[in-house]
Figure 1 (cartoon, helix red, strand yellow):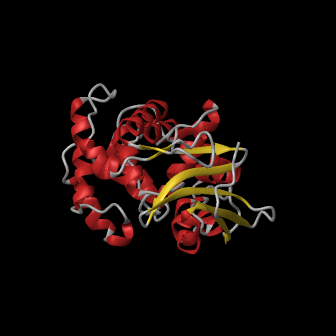
Figure 2 (cartoon, helix red, strand yellow):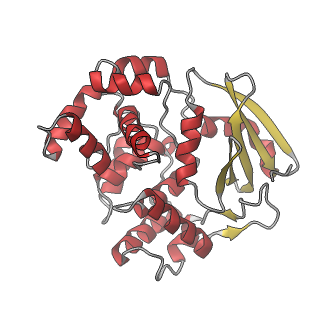
Length: 306
């Protein structure tokens, strides 16, 4: 049951229609970090930290169908106006879907996918650090497996919330410093990946690395991450898609993308060939990836990819 965590403040946030809100919720629901975020009755909710304050955020489709309604609960309510930009990025509200869909529809295969899911967005992230943690954990494991491990990380290094907005929101995500110093023995990840994760957390905690795109150039951030042991192009491109809002990010080595592209064109047998094929979808390759992943989800009846 959702409770009214006082005080609270709400804002209506406009977007360019169409918006596939249900598919956005489905994506987050399949990847939500247990205890930190939840999707309940068409409402996305999560615990957040913002400017040193703690509270909760809820986002839902407004009754008019033309806005999202964002509500900040608790001491965060004083920052509701400043939260509009990060919320808009998280739900990709600055996108111009008619232009994107028209461009992708020049490709016959993508045209059929766009027709099925007009207004499909690239789900973002409230926290670049949180998304990066999720992505490193998700290297070479299933969506479900990554979700399970991230939930364990929260219980090892996060902060428990005593009086939350909802019974499912019982934790705050670990801070970079807490995760860097946590005992992650037997967490369910290979030792090398644990080292990568804690190296990343330590770099963010020290200020050496900022995963907030507003603090640096995307090209520089890409190179900085790629220089870290254990982080490859797939990880960087996935972070670029969702945390840095790069509309042309392309996680080329993603197995779901490669397999479905090969099903469409059996001559695509090697990664360089897949990369060349994807060139036709510039500058909207991140949206192409979402459409292809969602076609796999539709076929399997569940979320795949990412």
